[in-house]
Structure formats: structure tokens, C-alpha cells
Length: 314
Image 1 (cartoon, rainbow, N blue to C red):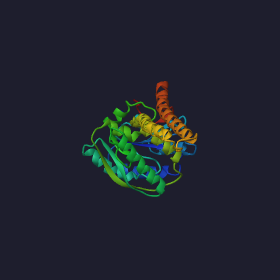
Image 2 (image 1 turned 60 degrees about the vertical axis):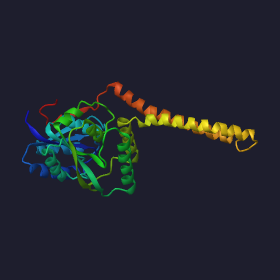
Image 3 (image 1 turned 45 degrees about the vertical axis):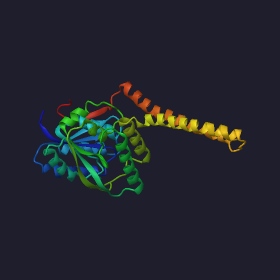
Image 4 (image 1 turned 90 degrees about the vertical axis):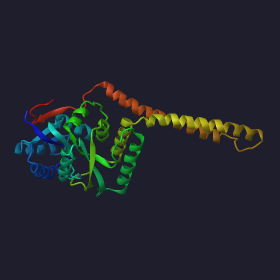
């Protein structure tokens, strides 16, 4: 197998508007390294001309390799497949929308050659995004940072460089509900960050509306923290304490002739509150149980329709 120095992994879903410009900029950056490289494009079940354009790029440049999914499996799974097929000594993850500048790869490579095994990109500024998305993203990163046992860098995405040792370690982690940036932090090794300004999307629309962002946040939290499960216990103790303290107050009030605690309204409110807490607790348990169910089924993480340009698939 030919030795490859760098692998650039790009998950793509309906990116026909961005793909030519992405290829041009990555090619321009990587050709200046004067070292061997490959571009691994993962087609995540695109419905537009993305797959056709990938084949055209491969025909024009054999350094472009393609992993074509049988259907859409999701961004994090597409990233995982790219890492599975990548053959480079260093693997660089970058999205196809060009919000993350390929030119930053130069800085990542410099840090890697200094001895760092993971070099992640820190979003110092986010252009073209609504205040709501920026605000919710900041809250998400700080919440997950505070409730997990691992140190996940703030304001980072999947845009990063990983040494082969890190990639091989992550390939041993088969969970299906994946949070790549958390998994990268979990494996350890020497890590550092480089700051950059995140640009507006080059073409097309975001593939992460609020609903998907919420599901992604739930996956991240349940994958790296037991806090939601512990929250049910804390709520139980809290309600039990309130009940214990309020019981003598109610008894004294009734014996003293007070009419403050008469009627069904108070009872009804307490029953509804207790029922709501119980349902929330069951929902939290259900989230974890559903993830356990997905794991024990043992289905493959993804199905590849065709892999093009790879000499060896480990």
C-alpha cells in the first residue's frame, strides 16, 4: 500500500453547490505541503448531484477517494466512515460547506509536527449565524463541559487534525450514537487548539435545524454523562424533603382552623407536579434504554454502496 501522509475527510450531504470550490481550495492548500495526501469524500445519501460530482473529481484526480453510502446515515456516522477508510498518518476532518476554512489546515499540520496528536479548531467568531444559534451553542458547550468527567474544549466542532494513533484508538469505539468531538477528548493524548473565524455557509442550506441540534445535544449529554439519570434521584429527594417539611405545617394549619389548605386545588396541583416529575424521569431513563437497545442489536453502523480509489480497506 502506498504511504499517505495526510487524509482529508469530508462528509457530504447535498453539497453540489460547495463541492467544486471545496476541492479547489483543499487541492491548493495540500499541493503546497509537497507531501502525499488523499481527499476522502463520504456521500451520505445525497439526493442531488453530489455523488456524480465526486466521481468526476475522482476521474480527474486519483487522489480523490469516495465512500458512497447506501442511504443517509447522518453526519457523525459519515465522519466515522471517513476515518475508517482514511489511510493517512494524520487525518483531518472538515465539513463541505466551507464555513471552516481549508487554509487553517496549514496551522494544524504545524502543531502536529510539533508533537500534538490532536489539533482542534476553536471558533473565535461565527459569521452569518443568528443570535439564537450562537447563544444556544454557547450554552450547550458550557453545559456539557460542566457535567462530564472529560474536558471537552469550548466552542469547537469536528474540524480537527488527528494523529493515526488517535484514529486507530477511536476505531475501537463502536457506539452508534456518536459525538466525535467528545470521543476525541476521551481518548486523551497531547492536544491543542488553533483559533479561527467561522465564515458563512458557501452554498445551500444548513443541515442542522433546531430539531437536529437538539437531538445532537441529547446524544452528546447521554453519551458522556450520567447527570440526567442522577437528576431523577435529586428530584425525588427534593420532593420528599418538601413533603416532609410541609406535612406538619398543613397539620398545624388544619388544627388551628386555618382555611388555607382546604379544597382540592392544592391536592390536584401536587398530584400533577408529582406526575410530571415521574414522566420526566421515565423519559430520561427511556433515552438511555433506547441507546442500549440500539447497541445490543448489533447492526452495522453504516452500509457502503461503493468505495472508490482505496487500495486496502483495513
